[in-house]
Amino acid sequence: MTPTLRRTPVRVPWATTVRPSEQNVVARPRSDRQYLLQCAWKEIGSLAHVISPEDRPLIETVALAEPEYEIVDGWGRLLPFAALLHEGLAFHPFETFLASRDLARTVADGGKNAPAKRAGSQPK
Image (cartoon, rainbow, N blue to C red; front, side, top):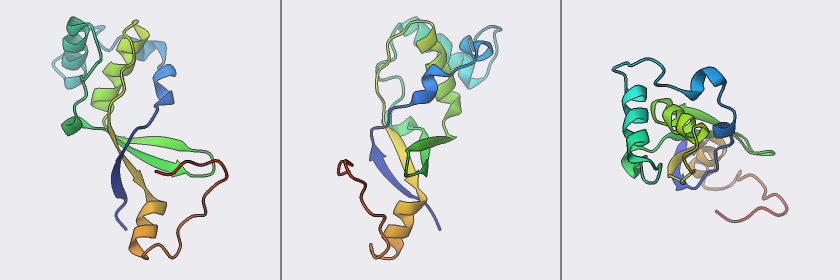
């Protein structure tokens, strides 16, 4: 079954867990996308609007009891973004695609097997 994709704001906790070896993607000049993005964004001096809606990463919800997220596609954009956060640039939110197998099942069966809402959860 294909996951359902929808636009949603997602806070990305992984941005604070970049290992020291990943902090400076541009340690050695390269011609790959990560190097080029980090150089360009560093020159701009801001992370505002650097990940456009057309380049949204794909994040999958892997657990609903306690929300956990897995990056499916977008490391080429997210790694330089995280590295520049560690270099001191301010965080600016961006859009992602959010995939969820539970949402796909809910849509496929017309909502009959929708997961029960948790206490305190906010409507999407």
